[in-house]
Image (tube, one colour):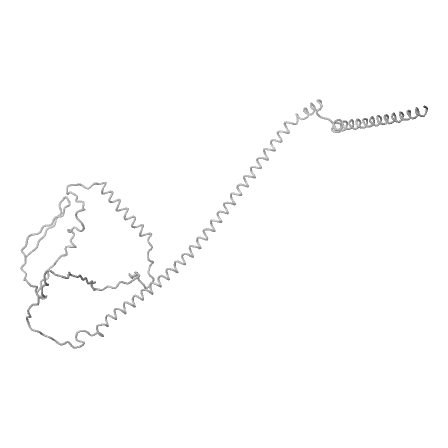
Length: 330
């Protein structure tokens, strides 16, 4: 029977699906043998785009008649663009693994501290409980069904079901192969890490050399700048001194020219008013004559004193002789 389905999209953007009805196929009660089974094309509903995944109570259902808001659409586009830009920036700043060496390739390696063993053993736990000492009624006896059928037995010889030497060979091959592969990967990883360290050391040496060269150039530029500033300051000082010297020379020439006729007239006026004198005469009048008068006065005072003393002595001697003479006459 032909199976026809129709899928179409409404002008509003709603997806619809419709199919023609068909009768249920007649199937047997039990499964048919593999040779007689009919192959049918079944679809997994989990991969159907029409199935909504996640919770449905938090979904924002937009009515079919509502028009999208341009501002909301622009805001969502801006958020998406910022997220993409942030993701690209993070990918650029993220440290990436360098390219593999020639003849090698990168593979995923488990780098956890402890390896986890995968097994299908289900973890089980025993739980016990203790009933009361006295029960309300006795326990129900165990039901043993009646025996039916015939007892049949068979004999299995050693090596018929499992040959250890033959069965363990592929397991050992897998274990040894995986061990060797893991060892090779570890050795390659160590070599790659050593190569990365060597590259890092070379890069650090180159960077240190470049930093030293940059510092040397900066120091040289600083010295040149200081020398330039010093030379400019010296040149400014020289220009300033030259300008001051020129101004002094001009002032001196102007002063000499202005005072050429003024000085003789001033000197003549001062000389006529007695402001100009002989220094020797001035020194004699101010220093020598006062000293001379004071010395003469001192000498005259001493001489006068000596005369008075001599007169008093002569008078006393004369009086004593007079008294002596009077005494002799009497």
